[in-house]
Every structure is written in C-alpha cells, then in structure tokens.
Image (cartoon, rainbow, N blue to C red):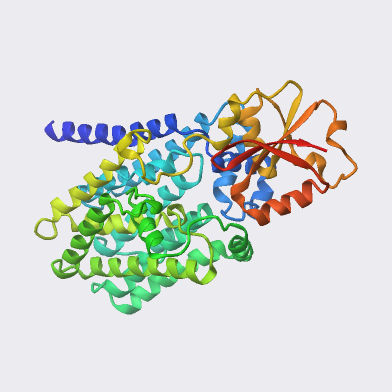
Length: 485
C-alpha cells in the first residue's frame, strides 16, 4: 500500500512538472513566427508534396502528421489547439517510454532522468510550441533509453533490438534533423565499450542497425543534400561562430538562460552549471569503474564537436539550441548514471536539477527587474501584434513583405486593416496602388530582420516598380510605412 502511494505521488509530481510550466509558457507567449509559418506550410502544400520536404530546413514526417489537424483548424481557432496537440504528443511519448522501460531499467534511473528532462526550461519552451520538437524528443528519449538498456542491462541481445533502434532513429531523422547528432552516440559507445560481447557480434549487431537506418532514409538522401545546400545560403540569421556563442549554446541545451553579450557578462547560473557538470564528468571518468559510461561521455563530446565543425566548415547558422537539442538526452543519460556512482554525486545531480528549476523564475517573470538583461527565447509578443492598436484609416490596405508573413499578419491584424500579400502586384508593373480596388491608401509592413539581400529579392519579384515610403512606426523586427505612387 505504501509503495502504491509512493508511485501515485511520483505520477502526480510528473503531471505538475509536465503540464503546469507548459500551460504558463502558452499563456504568456503569442503565436510565434515559426508556428504560423509551420501552419502556413501545411496549408500551402499537399501531403504528397510534403514528402519531398518543401520546408527546406525540416524533414517531412511531422508536417505529414499535421496535415489533417491543420485542415481542420486552419488559423480561425487560434494557436491553443495546435499547441495542445504537441503537449499531448510528448506526454504520451514520455509515458510510453517510462512504461516500456520500467521493468528493464532501474526505477531510480528513470525517475532521475525524468526529473532532469522536466526541469529544463528550454525543453518546456520548445515543446509548448506547435513545432516538431515534441515528436522528435519523444523518439529521442525512447532511442536513448533503448540503447542504454542494450549497453548496460540486456544480456541476450537479439537482431530485433537493433532493427528497432534503427527504425526509431529513422523516424527521429524524418521528424527533425537535430536527431542526427544523437543517433551515432550510443552505437559507437556500444561498439567500443561492451566487454561482455565479442567484437564480431557487436559488429554484426551494428550492421543490422546501420542497414536498417540507411535503407529507411535512402530515398530521402538526395532531398536532404539539396535542402542542406539551400539552408547554408538561405538561413543565415543567427549568431556568429565564436567562443561566447558556443558557450551560450551549450548551456541553453540544459535550459540555462545566459546574460546578453552586449552587457559584457556571463550568467552566474551558467558558470555554476559548468562547474557542477565538470565535477560530474571528472567523477565519472576517474571514480566510476564502468567503462560503458565513460565511452558514452566521449562519444557525446565527439558528436558535439562534429556539430561545431559542421557549423564552422559550412558557415551555416546553426548556433541556436533547437538545431541539435537531442544532444541533451545523451548528457542526461550521463548525468543520471552519475547519481550514486561516487561520493557527493547525488548532491551534484540534484544541484543540476535545482539549477535548471531556478530558470523558471527568469522565464516566467521576464518583465521583472531581476530578469533584465537575460536572453530569452523568441518574442513573447509577436512583432506584428504591436500594430493592432495602430489607427489605420478606413478602406486602407496593408501590404506584407516578405510574402510569407501574410498569414501571420492576417492572424493579428485582420480586424483592423485589409491585409494584402505583395503577390497581388507580382510583375504587374502597370498596376498603380491608387487604382487598386477597395484600397483608399496603402501601408507597407516590412520584416527588415531577414536581411537586405533577401528584402531586395522580395521587392524585385513582387514590387518591380518605384514606390515612395514614409516610415511611421517600428516594433522589434517590423517597420510600418505609408506608401504612395
């Protein structure tokens, strides 16, 4: 009876830690730019078109699954229903993984792993959105735990085990490319650390895993290469590659919110976190006799280094957490393994969980003085939302550049102004604004943050005639102009 109440308490704590922060995140964040763009992608492309990943930065599986919900909900019902779908995907994903491994892996390990996962505010932020991160993290958790089970606990390994993790790896890859950085960590650790199996058998098992994975994704590899080349040139808007930004990226994986660079400081939370993590790693390397855990650490570090090399060599702007967020799952396996493995390790692991939990105060109190100067994720208020209170005259029209912001502008401003996509003027240089039906005057909303070259491309394609603009207002990354012939 006492044991039953204990499990009930842990499940209740799990529900609170899972749902309450995600509800609070939803309640204080507008529909995000990327969320609306994701909905836009589903509304524009059919399921057959989604197979070839028209969103060049992401693979197709999540979009395919979201086709029907998007057709059903559109944007008329707000963003809440969409976010509920993602929250429930992750909830059932974690419940399934916990149930599947409950009798295969020690309960203590699963509970500590969940504690670390649920107190990470970056994961809360990502999985509260209508994006693919709930699904890829669900696959990632199952993948990481399955490999950990194979490496550390299962004696009688079968070919079906390696076929299964190969399928899970491919599903994760088709959901979000951040899975790429998690996939090789455990197979390599298994190859070099399992003293209980002869090398020939390990190679055979890894061959089954590798063939399963690559056969599953083989048809998509040309599309992946093509989209990767596009991404290198077309998605350049994030942080420069330097020591500060790499440091910020790494602590962000664990939900640690750093101080902005222009303040010339580093967050004390980040410094303490790194000190604790180094102590845990040193303890695992020198005080823990289990070689398998040491190998997982080395392969995790190597994967992160390869990620940084990819950023450096390609020049691609990947220095933000979600591009490799699945890496944190491997580090959580390592941190969880440290629990009780050497003196004071329990204290260190709980300190990391408490440190992660402390970031809730910053994340959910961003308007307070003690949060000033900290770098938070995305815009809490969508930049277009600021113009809801602008006094647009009757029969005025608002033209949107770039065109992909059309649906977001309609979502926020449809009730205050007639929203027009710039595509209505595409290559029709004879059309004059003043002669366009239903529009007495034209306003122009420009997202200048996409960069001068991309703005020029938009102008050249959609507005190939001379216009005069008068700047009226500006919020975050948006400028409002009054236009005339």
